Image (cartoon, rainbow, N blue to C red):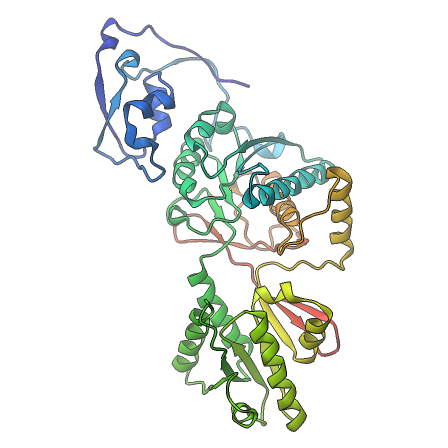
Length: 444
């Protein structure tokens, strides 16, 4: 239902130009609405607003177009659908209004990936019908060069209960203001740069920044392998970004008084073997994720075991290693007791995964992209989790663990509040390739 208003007549002096002093929590959209003008007209009168980094500041002044000037007035409401947290109709007893704001095009890889992600969202909506959950979906193609303000000016955007997006970090700021004004939950599926999360309780962010993830992963490794002797291997890869992780791990060991060994792929087999102990298990950590250094490490470990079969070891890896899983690599993963840290796991052998792949093929006449993660499965998991949560708990759904029996296909979700702000996904796994040729998922 649409909001229908009867406005009082604009006074005759409304043709004179004026300025507006910005008050606390005011937004571009609210100011434009109060003066009876469009967002585009307001932005045209204030060219700085067109910048993605533009922010309204309390006490600053904005120009109001002369031909549209009118003092802000209180409308006489004939009929109105409430939009605030206290007045919005309970989402548990009606169709959930879902907005998707992503680059939905086929012009580049970003667009193609997000089209697949969106298709996964639609598949989740279709599955939820069987549970009696109805979803009204409205999607916008928010490309990298798109105009977020035009997208948000669409009246349908303000009616959403949940928005999924954006992909690009530069759009997070305007969306943050928009959802606060209209009492909308925002799920950020991929972007990691969202400083507004610290103070906006309406936001949910799936991915963590690399620095935060490095520190939390290092702590988990130190805890999980607390009874093992750490062996850190320098791989002399000048392109690697994993040095930040091994540095964080070493600092934790040093703060706990844990002795660890340093060795190198360039060392002799004897020098390499001297880094290992025989009285307890060893955990090996490389400072690169590249496949060629991984293969060289397998060679070193093979020589080690051949001469010292009594040595026990596990090999701690990186999410990228899951892209190398040919038969040779898989055999070595089992042989060397590999643990891979990840926030997702695509088990292509599972019945559920295969069923969704078949459904995707049937619905869209093509296969999912050969990528990690599978974007359609990511979209399916995200949408199923949040739509089911909103249906059960309404706007108070916080995404915390244990809210309902949720078994993800690929992407576990467990949100925790960040201070007084929004919610950050803290779900984390070790994928363990065991020597008995089975795969164990360790939720941590």
